[in-house]
Length: 298
Image (cartoon, rainbow, N blue to C red):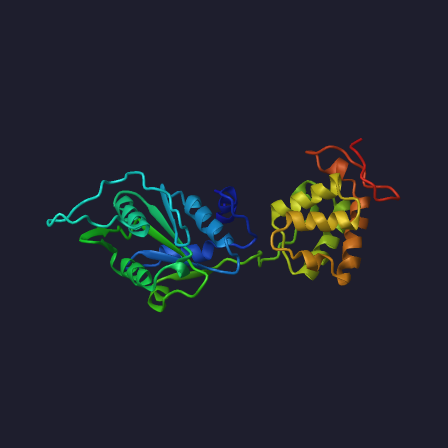
């Protein structure tokens, strides 16, 4: 069975970090209300990508999303005509938040449902209180109507760029999604179908990323190897490839004089690696030569 990390990658979120322990704490601990995950971090919209990928990785049939900063939320699937009260006064339309939360409650009555509330910091503080009441009681009130969530089926994800309302935080399990992966992964040539003759390149990359304080994911590292094999023929090429392929790398940091030696060692190791015989999936290209000019496939 694929790991959670692999399933997240299938749905668009790749990281070296493993979130299985946090997920067990969230899903397998007893609770009286709606299970709530507070997604924090410095990853900006990376947190949104994690929430969406996690909802689909869990195979929940219903995934609903609301962004408090969206000035033009999508129209609901069913648009009800304006209603009037007993005195003939037209009642106000249902707000987007009420529409999405009431729908999530209704869906959770029959099937597992994830509701993602994004950019919660932009919401009126009174909405924080209402969300807290939902988490505690499983009830969402809209005008005179009440919608009941099934705590066994509804899972709530909260994303905010600021700390949550204290009471709401106490009801949530908090998880950190960083701008870059925090877990260092030691790759070896055999992971990529290469033999031990390419180990110097992997060692040079390990030194370089250690200096950068970054940990590339498997797919990022795969792309870097292919770029070195097919395109990169100078330190400048390598810098462009590193910035283009590796999330979270600072462009100015790649130009730091202190990295010159580490970058040169990567290029030296790349020139001696027989990638054309080791990576079977691409066109053959030679790394050897006395200049840095790109060479076409042989």
